[in-house]
Length: 452
Image 1 (tube, helix red, strand yellow):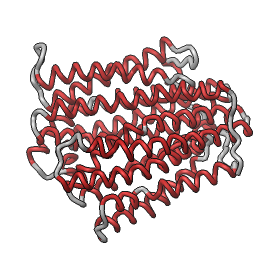
Image 2 (cartoon, rainbow, N blue to C red):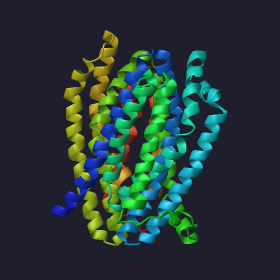
Image 3 (cartoon, rainbow, N blue to C red):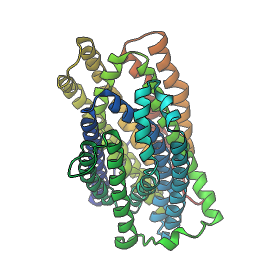
Image 4 (cartoon, one colour):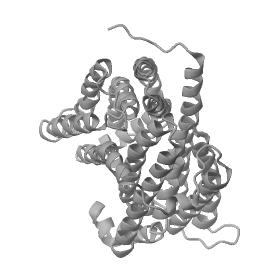
């Protein structure tokens, strides 16, 4: 089928205006995580393991937050394209309420059952004890991070992509300083070690919260959101539209998040060498995919604006253009991983067996990332922006949970295939979804306006 491309320069400038801040924000967040690990790692494996495992539970909270963001962004982008600002404000209202309820639930569970939470991930008493110290402080992070994250991410839907980048930059420097002070006891602060890492995160998230809502309520002139807009209940019509298009996104993102956990469990039972090798590959994979994530965000927002404005033909052209961009950047990143991957492995001190496994996995990732780019731009971008959320939910359920996870478990745990081949099995859903979603794109059936 002949691909119709967008030729207007303004379109590509809009893509860059969203893509670049998102990509830089993701890179900064990676840097924060790496510095946290390096600082806490100086106290030994117990505290490092405890913080890592405690953050596994926090990652579940983050998954649900991203589901709220994904579902709300579909409506916000389309309402913004239709120039219905009041409906966009209602979307923010609904999203922030959901984030608040979610935060309260996780905070209560964390405060009451920190030892039981750690017991899910380990049976080592020392690790559990240190993890409890970390989780106690984490209790106070949920609300400020959940609401701040949802608000900052939703501002992208109205064309304000810089806020997330600015907030991440501020968080980066605040987190470094606070961690240094409270982990090591510098500048007169108490030496708290693992608890200091949690406190540093709390301070950084508080800074994010203050900057985000100060900008939205005081500085932003586009949306005009005010505190009073968050106090009234959304209309019944809005509730219907929100859960019709937004609920499938929340389900999809939750299932994908738990699917990632299942992949980690399968690889974890294949031995420490496989786990270490895959951890190295994931660092490079996340670094290489920051641009792809930026394109996915841009495609969802821009396509949503066009669908909301009622221009079907333009939405089709934009969708096919984003598909071509995903193929180009997927191929580029695949080639980079193929050649750069083995060089990055040499930066680590590993056993010979682990080096072999890591190099094999790098070559597997080089092919996987090509399909990852396509399916990411389609599922998280174009089709989601077009409101095709029920179709995407079915795709995530069928291909990950009925194909990839069982096939990967069979390959790695029963047939004992090598790690690179098992990884292909665990990510086979990327290839299947790429083909299926591109077919859906060309059919034009993915365009759904908010209003029935």
